[in-house]
Amino acid sequence: MHAVQRVDAYQRSHSWVGFPLGVLYKFFDDQGGYLAALITYYGFLSLFPLLLLLVTVLGYLLHGNPGLQHQILHSALSQFPIIGDQLGGDVHAAHGSVLAIVIGVLGSLYGGIGVVQAAQNAMNVVWAVPKNTRPNPIKGRLRSLLMLAVLGVGLLLTTALSGLTTGAHAYVSGPVASTGIRLVTLILAVLLNVGLFVAAFRLLTARDVTTRQVLPGAVVAAVGWQVLQAVGTYLVGSKLRGASSSYGVFGIVLGLLAFIYLAAILVVFCAEANTVAAQRLWPRSLLTPFPDDVQLTGPDQRAYSSYAAAQRSKGFQQILTKFRPHRRGADHDEPHEDQ
Image 1 (cartoon, rainbow, N blue to C red):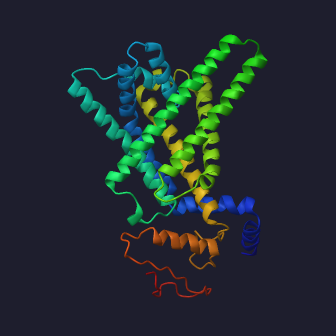
Image 2: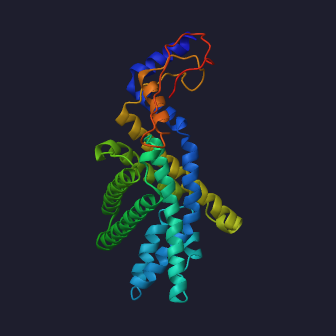
């Protein structure tokens, strides 16, 4: 027990240990794994409708420029390095009557809003936004539609960056110049992703959060996204080549689910880090998640109070959280006031 107390004292006095531990505890308190799973579910369901919407819109807007159509679609699919090629072969533009296309586009758009709704729910849980201050169903979907538009702009910027990179490669030669171009492209891609994550963290949270509050998590998420893509590309090139022919649709589904889930875990964890830093929710007691007989720290109490306040359903509802003085060995089943 003394060893545990020494470890606890060390992590409380050293932020490089206490802060990551606080983020981890907040992640589990908010059931971050389930929030990421919900994003994964809706992301999986909405991916094909969104790609269908993208291909259909590109077919109308860039009817005379199939090369640019292919480039934009390739930029979108490159975000999924494990299964992007297979997705590209399975998605085709919608054709038929105007009414059928309109219905298909609206259905695709509605499906795409689902994943943004799931992300909105995750951000509001992470920031402990009271239920009565969260957007109503109409405003929530309008906010989701705005986020989809931001992602669309990000896709166009990514395509432009890819085009500039391709053009630069045509005018330079040699390994040094090629390495320099790849490095500049990587830096620009990370900066672009940082901007997109900052916009996402702010737009998806139903409370006033500043750019300064969400910037650290956005930077980590942008770098992590690039690492995730690099690992996926490596797996495709050296480990999974020919896997699609062996496993078919089953392999595509598993690869897609795994990739989306890892990306969702990354986003939720970075959002938790922003919250812990902004609200100073560390250091936590080392044994907080385990026994009930534990001395809570101030950040522990603030965290638990925010969880209770987040359940407020009406503006005139009042929630008050009280903590009794800690007494080791006391009966924790006696009633106490939470409201």
